[in-house]
Image (cartoon, rainbow, N blue to C red; front, side, top):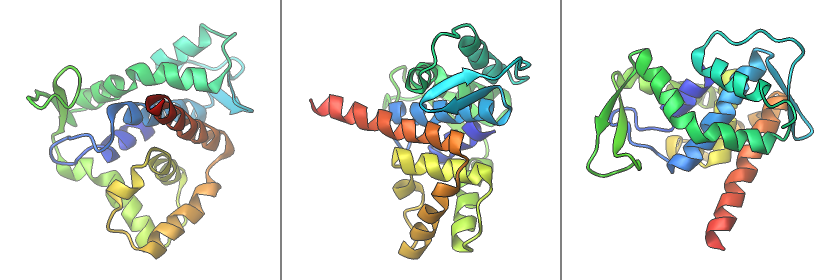
Length: 209
């Protein structure tokens, strides 16, 4: 799933150490979770507004179902930025829990307090954890047109500042190719990614003020 892959991409594939601030990762995960609902045609995004599609069946995935139910219960709330912020509050732990249930992560206490609760999520397989990075690297090394999931991951990485971390060994030509691919992202999903970029920018400005 999209959010699972973004979680993997945003953490060290061996230690599980976050590669970005947790708030930034949470916004990326929230966007990815909304993207999962978009792909399943449960919601629609246009003009900065998020709406539930007519008579959708609830998602089968428990995490997606929970988020969808929250959106469906508040039909008067349409603003995309509001829902992105709302979903981001619990996105980190929700996606981590989903990956733990599938056996891909284990929870460990850490003395470094990388998270407020002193918990770090450690991959059980570094090969599986590194899969999104391997996929993106393969696309840009061979200048291949990206499929939808690769475009989402590349776009979220660009919006959150993750690209310079996970693709730090990429050449200038490879990075230029990557950025030429980003405008191909499906328009509703691109709107969600753009909102991530705006939310991160607003948070930085608020912190500086």
